[in-house]
Image (cartoon, rainbow, N blue to C red; front, side, top):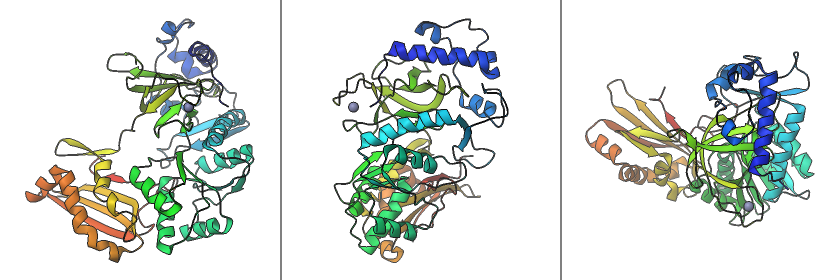
Length: 435
Ligand SMILES: [Zn+2]
């Protein structure tokens, strides 16, 4: 379904984008003024990297300098990456580019097993320029499947009522939304055996959450990432049935991807982890060339057993999912491990927030808030969870013994933890010490 280009063919397309950008965009014309021409990969290595700051400061509507289009704009769509106004990053695509992005995403959904016979519930938040809901609307139509545009803008009881009435075979949303649906299904003891695929995006799906979803939706439900995508570049990775949970095929006719070791200033060898540099091969209205996207990955260097010739890579975690106590970095997995055994029992949800806050006297206040369909019943596990946290994170144990750290666990009603009004995500780590 996905075309395959050799590395050389993909590079030549990337060079075409480079030449177009240099000619038609003021920003790139200036950025590349010392590079006369590029024809080989050795030449390509001299093309300077595009940073997040450069993209933020030179993108439309803040600036027109990266654009290759004539003003006023025609036939375009604006989307946002979801931050609050002012900090949000916006992406402008022409309809032609939007269609190219969607066709790749639709192919990824077909590979997941979604067919025209399926009924697909679209449970993303709509509005605020957030693209997921409308992009999926178009994707589901491209596949020819039946669409239930429920959204996550409505209350969860109403969402569940639609699901029970229409019995969709596919649910698409954020892990946060699936967790609360699972909480409500378990609370009401509903039989939900009609869902065959849960497709997620936007957040990490931990083992704890997968386990919780299986309790509600049954052991056979397929839980898969929709794809590895970015607003600026579209689909960067898609999964076949042979891919591990963080493994993706590269669409070689759509992106030219390099993995780069910045410490040693060189391209990574197969199996070596490096930063993803991405050049989109079809976005010409505002080209994206050697963009340092902020993810790390490594090439597997092995052919995939599915027969697809597009190379596979394994994506590493994004930064920002761990916190610091007493000089050591601690991952959120360690926090989850402290209560994951109790999730789906006593009403306990997999939606939580871990809050770290400095008090005015210099002490550290740590609070774990977990949603529950029965907070009274869940309370009996507070002592165990606190002990588990202290066992798993010695610095918290020592800090508490010295009177420098206070640790509390609290159960709150379903749906009350603060959610982003734009994306609907619950912020699992809320480290108020980090500015
Ligand atoms: Zn494969």
